[in-house]
Image (cartoon, rainbow, N blue to C red):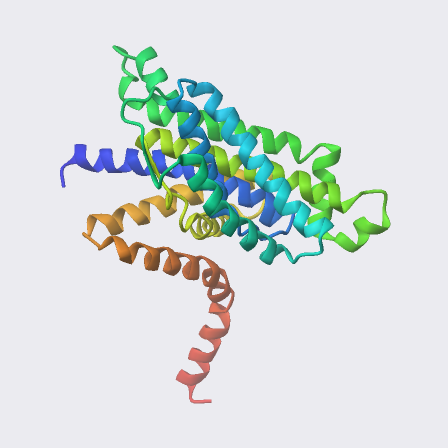
Length: 307
């Protein structure tokens, strides 16, 4: 492989990693801060892609971003409402919404596939602006990086506000929150609304980046995001909100690098789901085995001494 080809692969992995990092940051808010495992991620990602594509095709590339995030916010509200007001378990609520979103996404798209080759998007807008400059080939990277930076800054600020601290308290100790003046129903719904808005934004940007949307575009995103989140926690698990959020972004990039390497080995497409599952297993079990290394060393020493 030539150096230019290698750099091209790294740039592609970075672009895709940054776009999927928005979904990872959504799980960072819902899973790590709010302590809710939201399984509607796959459907919400596709919803953002579908709504964003339809609005962009109609000639409104900038409005597509707002529309996609609004659709994600609504999805998060429904998921939170099912959990808090209808007594449905959080895992089951996510599965129900994810299942329902499949039909909704088909209805939004009008078919199972949308082609955006002739559609103006936020990426093509920036490409036109940068034409003739040394950054002309980096327009996808710039858009994705700008989105991630804005989301990280938002989370760093929001989670230090009164409502942000209430969301974190709800995730840490819901029983204590119930005995205080904080309403866990409101904090849960707000947290899921914001998280799903970020997930939908991620789907919207991916659709506009690859110039197409299919109904399975969000398949496996919850696995990818969870793996990336756990990888990031391994690298930068300790520290403040900003440090942990940056760690989540780093985890998304590392995951995409591994994914890219798997593709370079001409691995069949149907095996990539297995790769994702293996990465999740390694990300979860890694810290556990790392903590048990001293015990393994003691056992080996005792065995060697004959005791």
